Length: 281
Ligand SMILES: [Fe+2]
Image (tube, rainbow, N blue to C red; front, side, top):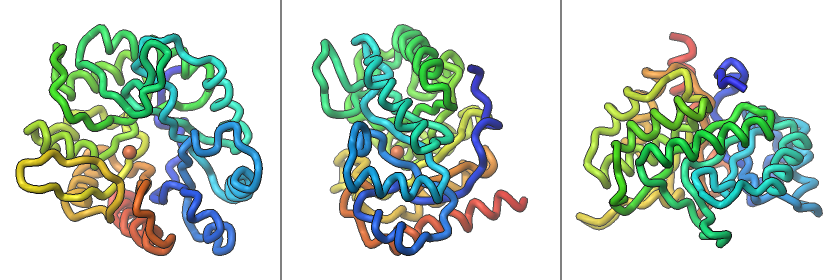
């Protein structure tokens, strides 16, 4: 399957679906264009949570976002896991699906986290081969998300930008661009976030994540905590991204310190207002 953004409908700005907001969404049926779910929160799950998801999926277009496929790993791909993701995608009518450019299992041990990859040609080859397999199995447009990293990876043959460009090219998949992760990596590692984004291939950027984070103490690393409202620096970088790419499906991502649904709804409307500027232009 050759990646083309044309296979992904342009829907607009929304929020990541979280369990805490199921009741509000079902009761209020807010005018949101789509939802992204965290795949593993619903995988192989029945009961009320699953029924709520099915109700929401009947009303809204959906996309799934996973953390457990270990796309960059060296353990064999988990066929049962991929099959379960495929089944969930089919059941909720997911329009596209995404994973992380990282690994989460090594020597058959779950590392319970998104571990960054070394920026080497060997890692590019490995990711590309695995993504081809995953895309073939899932039969849906497939995106990889750029992750944060907090250590200098000693094995480095290229920059983060070159690594990401090579992966997208060789894996022939889309990019879920986490604008906040670019901002955080740029500050932690001393590069220019705007130049980084402008060097990415616009035809591959098919979704955007926006999240807030806590400003650290002077000199400390910034972490992608997903626990605060999106700040001005991220809104500015979002604008720059849309200027480079054009309108892209966007979600506000919040994973802890989850506020009332209205608060996230307001943030998604803020994103939609910015998106509209680039849609009409
Ligand atoms: Fe993200």
